[in-house]
Length: 238
Figure 1 (spheres, helix red, strand yellow):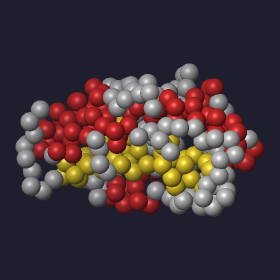
Figure 2 (cartoon, rainbow, N blue to C red):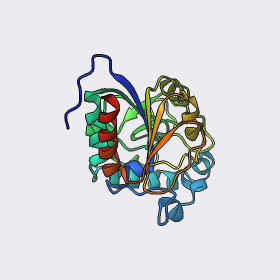
Figure 3 (spheres, rainbow, N blue to C red):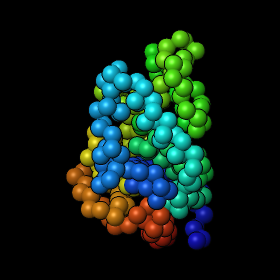
Figure 4 (cartoon, rainbow, N blue to C red):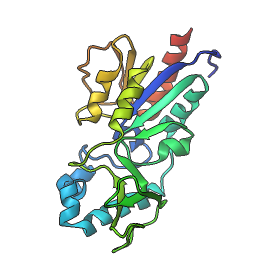
């Protein structure tokens, strides 16, 4: 597809959720057959669960990390990366995979952390890249505290939220892909988007946006949905 070349690129901000990566084979959490049916959220994705049973939590994220090493970015991820040729693109993602980066997106803000990183249990800023390997039983961070996944769990602060709100507030165009907008605080990001900004929502299931924005709904999965979004944005620029 040939876009018009723009000297002053429009700022495109994209919020992605689990549906963004579903076509890559990564299980979603809330859908039927999703991970929360196999693993109670309070046991594997809360700070209390970590204190109760760190071995279970490590095993859960070790499995997620191993699986991530076996999958590839889908057409949706690649389509978003291609949009950087004509837009000033920021991606804010609720996902803890690295598929946006592997597809070529250069500005990705992870609200909930990143599977391929571990961190100190004492200091959230003390992160280390571990790729797709397991965190071993009893493994320690440099400060001597237990090494844990660099994941923001329920019951913990979300340090990237302030940055996400700032990014959203400058959006000329805002797109939501593969998230129900039901989980706060991430779902509240759309309320920082100027009301004059055009909003697109890509999801095969009905999602209601209660924000006062004019929303264009694209009822498709990530791959087809991003392709349709790109076509609509081409018309938008002309």
